Amino acid sequence: MEGLAWPENDFADWIGFTETASEVLTSSLVERFLAVVPGQSQEPELPLGLHWCLAPIAEPAEGLGPDGHPRVGLHLPPIPLPRRMWAGGRLVFHDGLRIGDEVRRVSSVESITRKTGRTGQLVFVTVQHEIHTGRGLAIDEFQDLVYREPPDRERQKPAEAATTPAAGEARQRIVTDPVLLFRYSAITFNGHRIHYDHPYATQVEDYPGLVVHGPLMATLLANLARRELGSLSRFSFRGQSPLICGETLELHAAPGENGLALEARSGTDGRIVMTAEAA
Image (cartoon, rainbow, N blue to C red; front, top):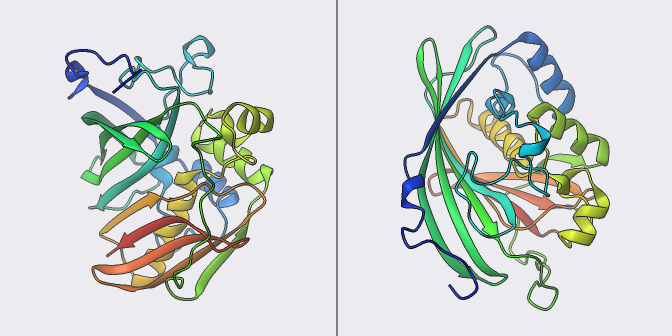
């Protein structure tokens, strides 16, 4: 790829790189999660998405990059592109988490793929997370991260509003605001500045405002899917367009070819911001 300083070994030495972290799931964490994430309940099972709050990377300030994330090359390959985001993921649920569990996460770099998209050069890094408790494997997750070029106003076009009908009636509506974003950043120990630093989000990364977290929207969709289906064995999601703080988030669900089809849409213009499937 022109302009991208790519090593001859294609970062092959990072494939299989593994880290392990653990934390006890406490009732106080569950209480904070329920206070932060709209519309969730502890009964009869703990809400999905709690594992994204457990054992976060606690890098000292000197180990952070200019975007607030831990610097590349410490826990993820040093891809020479400055913008890093969570593009999507796939999860298989084997067992629920319980208060008092010591939850252990084993994370491994699975693949590194280069592509060219509408906004320029892209590099996708897939990381597998195995979430274990004392009872065995609870969640098997594949997380897709995307590295991108700096914003280019001439190349970067705003996402168009959706012209397709929504996947069923809106099941839940959430008004997003800076307090919601700040508290979700806090509970997940997410330092990415696009979620709380308005000047950085608008002037450096060229977003119209603060960006709503992808994992927060995925958490809401996964728990909606479980309520609709009664139980959940697998869930996959993919971000389609940024949802900007202040927009209303609408969650839709309808029967699909492989279970339940879900969408998160902007209540402002109807555009799709995330799609998901569940069974």
